[in-house]
Image (cartoon, rainbow, N blue to C red):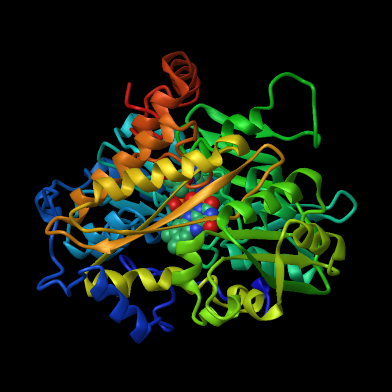
Length: 525
Ligand SMILES: Cc1cc2nc3c(=O)[nH]c(=O)nc-3n(C[C@H](O)[C@H](O)[C@H](O)COP(=O)(O)OP(=O)(O)OC[C@H]3O[C@@H](n4cnc5c(N)ncnc54)[C@H](O)[C@@H]3O)c2cc1C
């Protein structure tokens, strides 16, 4: 089975994954949680946030409803509680905890479902006159508060923009509309013999527009690149008109404005379609596991491949803690002798030269077993978060990137910051590398500990300590989750006031009335 065989999953609000296929915690994991002091919560309705009664707020005015319905049609305007609740925030752990607590503070006043670029453009053109703020919503899988603006708003759900518009076999490009979900994109391309090769762990729910807006990175990034590297063109609807970008694959005609839109998280406009580079579907794929004595040894090997090649399509290295926690069968590494697990994968023929580099760097080939186990299980792993929360564990992830020379110190600093901030509930901190470049890599951390009485405040303090450590140790606040509202202040510090002012100027030009994603990516003016 490959990614193009996977279905689009209709995510349920407040719980990740396909409700028809829940994943239960293995008994060993429940036992392990006891060692962390995890106890089933007496009630799952706990939050430090003010719960704002959804019903207490005044709804949209007649004029606002009339305007929205006139653009999308009355049947594609939803203001019932269920639709609004289903579009409330995204899928970070704090989002899920707020959801469990019935916290409606990030709920839209209505949801509209435009069917075309023109309808999106018409919404944007008229919203300022009707005093409406808008939030674009592609798959709704943001984990950084990217769907929770600082003002009341209407959600623009792009699911009806679900077409493969054109495929240029000579140039190997495809134009996909923003609301095409990951599996639907792969299935449509597979019918024509192509693949996009973009497989984030949120693949079942995330969409093309969100990938572009948040600069997503998938698990085959070593072979296919990050999503922004796949985009050669895009169409952006803004309150002041439409911007078409990408006349040629590369251009020296001034700065690359595509890169200004990629990662703009709905602050400058709504991306209605993107033109992506596509590749022929691989006829064969190979995945295998490798053992290294330590994370540091594996890091040297992974860096060699990133810098001197040949790179596989998938390249992933777990640290000691992640290896120990994730391996169902510790003997896979050779009689419980410790060490760390690396996964390599090839879309296409197996490349022995890659294996030779790993062997020369001290790696031991564990064969296809661990590679296939990882390949098959990788979309199921996030399903474990909800049962872990049910049991009373706090589990969340964070990520960063840095130059190779800073990676070891950055990893230590972030781990120590999290452990220090969560000393009352000693955590497990797992780490892996799965996106590499010639000059550096991304570090991805998973944190598991017992929930305190106020898990939202508990995570906020751990995240704030981690953010500080990232800044001090020379990392970036995000490699692929983006900024949203959660990382906004750290982002402002990272890029500095002049750069913020420049971005604000772009926003003022394209969105003069600040109707798009207010407070997301950039502070409100
Ligand atoms: C379980 C899980 C696993 C994840 N794994 C990964 C991973 O492996 N790699 C990774 O990169 N990310 C991952 N993410 C984060 C998330 O899936 C990505 O950020 C993804 O790119 C978001 O896509 P989306 O379609 O869901 O966007 P949304 O959540 O709908 O939107 C994200 C942001 O972009 C804005 N936006 C959405 N559509 C548009 C548009 N068309 N034009 C302009 N702005 C828009 C939104 O307003 C919001 O601010 C994961 C999330 C979860 C919950």
